[in-house]
Image (cartoon, rainbow, N blue to C red):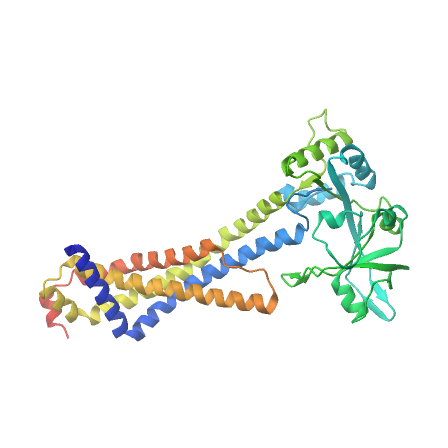
Length: 418
């Protein structure tokens, strides 16, 4: 075994002995790092959870589904004013556009649509407010995450004959029907009664917002109640042969068809509609959380800096207390480099322990929040490595000053110190 390795192992042993011998000081040193690392990890989890929420809240369709909307917020780089202007100036997407796309591309692509409004739902003396009323085509369950738990979904004759039937979410079942089966029974939306033909599987909640407070009715029935040209619809589409037609090709085919429909093909005008994909939503969510992270992460560095200063001060105090020990080691042949490495190892070990404990603390708090609120929070893998890396870096950077001070002590003065 080389002398360098032997010296390193000896320094590690002495560092651990010192940590155990001065447990109170070691704990106080670690606390600052625990808090700093925990803050960084919790912020990372919150930003990751926010990104997951944005994607989940906006995109309730499969990764291979393309959505055409009148205007999508992501197209305007989070410029609310530009988005609002587009919403007011762009032409609505109507059921006539849906039929055009179905006639033009229906053999290769499954194309459906949905739109929504809000009405209270009533049954007997019970009234449920804040319910989303969705007008949908019969294939929307194949284009979104809506799955039927009981009963059935809409069929073509429900749409063609504009029947007063509905599919309801679990919140509506719980509030209006209690423990009884809703299938075949009726609920009141506005002044019209609708027969319940299906109940959707529960989708849970995202950031405390329930995803099950909805009623779906046939698109034709929706237009009969609210007016055919009262609001813009969203068109959903995916390739029937997903193995040979990629989402990118689906997007381009739909864009071309819509530009032909809008008379834009032979012009240099921009699209007067928005196309939304799972990838574009993911990128948009990443951009938003990235902007927030750029602002917040520098603030978390302050917590780590404070922790580093605590470490440095505690280790400087340790050097002062252990002058005699340092003098004895140097008298027995320890070199200045040995003393320097001993204190650096000791500081790095303390901060590494603090980093691991901070990671455990943050994970426990995040788990508790998830358990109490069902928020979609997770600790990103990169945050784990960051926590360990940062804690080691803090130990090295802030341990240099006390380590150098210890290594430069005069052996005779150190031995004579009390």
